[in-house]
Amino acid sequence: MTATLERPVTAPDAVAVRRRDRSNLVPILFLAPAGVAIVLFVILPAVLSLVASFFSVPLAGGAWQWVGIANFQRVLTDPAVLQAIGNTAVYSVITIVPSLVIGLTLALLANSVSRGKPFVRTALFLPMTANLVAMAVVFRWLFAFQGGFVNQLLGFVGFGAVNWLGDTDTSLITVALVGVWRSASFSMMIFFAGLATIPGTLNEAAKAEGIRGFTKLRKITLPTMKPTVVFAVVLAVLASVQAFDTINVMTQGGPQGSSETILTMSWKLGFGYFDLGAASALSFLLLVVLIGVGILQRRVLSGGSK
Image (cartoon, rainbow, N blue to C red):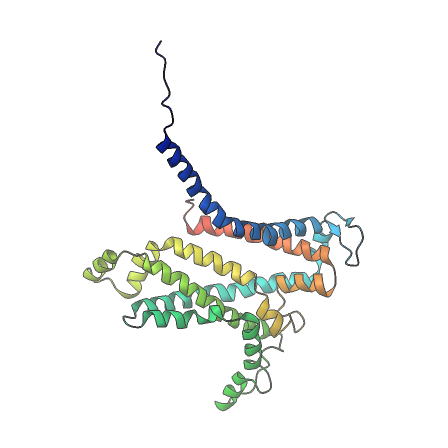
């Protein structure tokens, strides 16, 4: 039997090991602040919300009282909450597709510009950088029934004034227009980044074969940047379901709950009616639905591949 002798660690090897250990610590140190922030402001509130959904939480202090699934039963049988869930579904339908189509169109236009591409890209991205609360105030003035810019424009061309935010038939559509304006800008940047990943040789080959316009978009551009499309769709869904700032400022869910969404209803339950248990239950249900929709969308749009 032959004995195996281990080679002693020499001084240069020890130095290399210490350098490798230090280099491994660098990404951990950079990620640590973000990790702590995620735990404190995302994971911990989510866990507390889940726990609170099974209790009656007194805002004046005192012990939480166990109520089981009573909070879930109440929110799922409350007509106002059911109306908010339906409004959220309608809001998502009328904002997701238009924002994706407009975002893709703007990205293609910006990508086709030969000169001033950085300026065009920055100008199209400006809506995403705007403060949502401030812009909601601006849009509330634009769509105001009396003195609003939109009604003044309609009056100029001979149409009557429309109570955009005060009518149950138009309030949800009006706030959805603002959602499209906001989401289209973000979708444009995602698609623009996806277009940059398409190899130039592929575009040259398509040009040589005479493939242009919508045919090129359908057969070459979209299939090539399929992961980008999946990512943009998932983010558009999340943005539409989590719409809160603009709706709360422009209509506060009114009139008669016609523009109420799940998040504005959660806020109203928690800080308007001081029913934190019901608000937590509704928020947790929304989280479960979002996770399910995200997984389903990813599987469907990616063809089942991981």
